Image 1: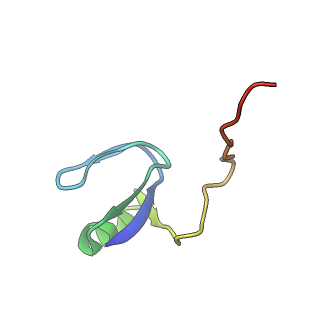
Image 2 (image 1 turned 180 degrees about the horizontal axis):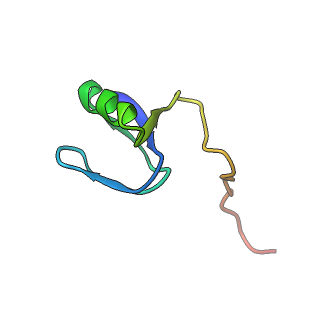
Image 3 (image 1 turned 60 degrees about the vertical axis):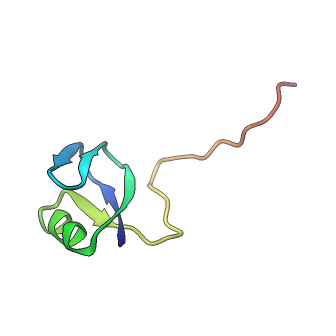
Length: 61
């Protein structure tokens, strides 16, 4: 299994629907095909999408 990030919204017959910038682990063959069609990019485990911030849950003050 390889983790990929969708570069745009698309649908794949075996992998299902992807939203833009969605990250998901898929079979190696599917990942290679999607990367080859410029629909996705491989993601390193610690990598975060650019421009996306992570907010921590907290109580109101």
